[in-house]
Amino acid sequence: MKSGRRSPIYIDLRVVISYPKLMDELSKLMWNFAAPSISKYDTVCGVPYTALPIATLISVRENVPMLIRRKEAKGYGTKKLIEGDINVGDVCVIIEDVVTTGSSVLETVADLRGAGLKVTDAIVIVDREQGGPENLQNEGIKCHSVCTLMQIISILKESGKVDSIMVEKVKAYLEDNNDVTPIYPVVKTSKATIPFETRAQQAPCEVSKLLLKLMARKKSNLCVAVDVDQANDLIDLAKLLAPHICILKTHADLTKNFTGEISRQLHALAKQADFMVLEDRKFADIGNTVAKQYSGGCFEVSRWADLVTVHSLPGDGIVKALEEENAKIEEPRGCFLLAEMSSEGNLITTEYIKGSTQMASKFPKTVAGLVCQSLLLADQPGIVQLTPGVRRGEIKEDSLGQRWVTPEEAVIEKGGDVIVVGRGITGAKCPEKEAKLYQEELWAAYEKRIAI
Ligand code: 5IU
Image 1 (spheres, rainbow, N blue to C red):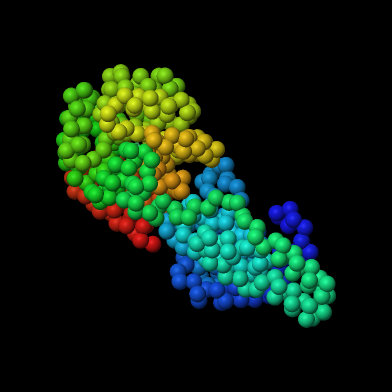
Image 2: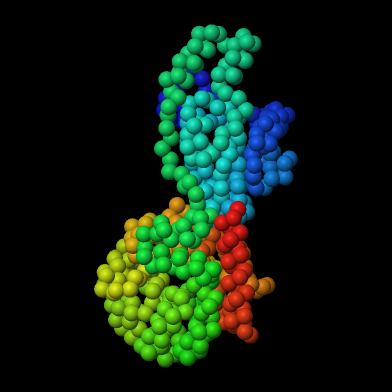
């Protein structure tokens, strides 16, 4: 067995692909047996490999979209672990051939839930009666098995294919091996489907907690990137947009006359109008240098920005530097670690993303979230996902590699919590009106996401 134990019986259903009619019958039997008692499903996903063709047959015949879980994420291209169209909150039914302890099913469930899907049911052909259904039940999954191992053995016995000695051996084996517990971390509920208020209570980072509360209170998951040339325009825009945003994102170094007075005004306005300020500085140097850039220099960022963005590239030292500087400030401060970018051809790899998420988990008090393009750390509700590259309308890219998706795609498909919009708002005829539209559309998408 996969577990290393020696068993008197082994069921190999891989060979079923050589018998098309049988495979068709089997897939019908599974679906017709279980589907009527499954209250909601949007997709099916077969556990590789045996159940994949069976899931395919079900998907095509029943017209239910299918997903495939890769065993390893690709290191290139889209870097996806799950193939197929994912809508966060969709309910996915697992299709499996044999369930023993349930660990293979749970591995698949972990990745599906990690991608924001809900999993409540698994349809399997054979239950080996070794704790599988119970282990799945503990993770909130009902196991619908077409038959049990002992039923198969009884039929084989009746038709003279096995003798009573074998039947007794199998029985004894099952009795001795029915309490095998799979050790696999399973995300019970993806953070994408938990309301911001609830997530605020679970956030170890003070700024993340405040931000999630602010978002819920203001009904806004909109962050505007105010990349404007003049500091006065920045303040004017901040005043106009204030009612509609949870975060105002600045690039102090691209705005002329961004003086200490301007940053003080911005800070005061943010307090008064209930939004946070994120300086998108993308620090990327060694800790010692970043500490100085953060607290000193011409911008003294730590004085006025609730949040900053940071590259994970230099390693832990960069977050440690911010943590040390934050300890000197009374107000809560935090950062967003950059895990993925929206721009075409960026050099970020799967390994790099993994490293960034691990780094985020190491500094729960300082890292308020991740800047990314897909749902990461789905099991950490306190980690806020900041997703840039969003614009309404037909324009999907600029001439310098930026790629835009729609507000709904950013929230539902990518799992974004705070959505960053720049030119879509600042370049509009009436930025305030446009910001209101974005706010409403983004909030509606969030409500749809948590309601599913
Ligand atoms: N930004 C991105 N993509 C990224 C990261 C940051 O667009 O991957 I990291 C910033 C750049 C700009 C804003 O300040 O978000 C998006 O502005 P537009 O909506 O105008 O493209």
